[in-house]
Image (cartoon, rainbow, N blue to C red; front, side, top):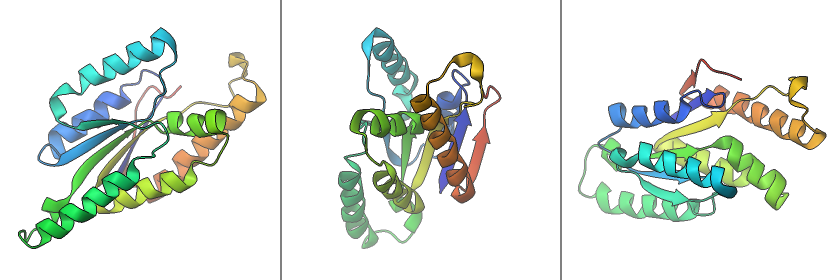
Length: 182
C-alpha cells in the first residue's frame, strides 16, 4: 500500500503521516527514511524536532538523503520473508511500514547536489511500497507564485516536484492533501 501525504510548509503533513503509523500500522516493524541534508542551524533544529515527534512510533531511523540504503532494506525484507514464510500463514505479518520524509528533499538532493536522476532509486522505493506499507511525505509549492522571486533552477525543481506528486497520486492507494497548501 502506498499513501501520499501532501501539504505546504508547516501544514502538519509529518505529524499526520506519523499518526497513520500510530493508528494503523503500530504492529509492524518499520523504517523512517530521512532525506534531509542538514544545512546550518535551521536544518539541525528541524531534524531534532522531527526526531522528537516520532520517538514513540518505534521506527528505525535511516538518514539516507539519496535512498542509497534501499537495497539493504529490500534484502532484509527478502531474508525475513524467506524465514517467516515457513512459520507464518498470514502474509500480512511479513510486511513493514516505511515512512519516507520527504520527496522534495530527495528531488533537491539529486537535482542540486548530485545533478543526477533520482527516479531509479525512487522507483525502487515504490517497489518496496507495493509489498509493504509505504508513506511518502511531499511538500507542494506553487511555481507560479512570482512574489517569491524564484530563479529558473528553483522553478524547474518545483515543477519536477509537483509533477512527481501527480504521478504518485495516480498510483497511490490513498492521497491526503493537508489544508495548508502553499
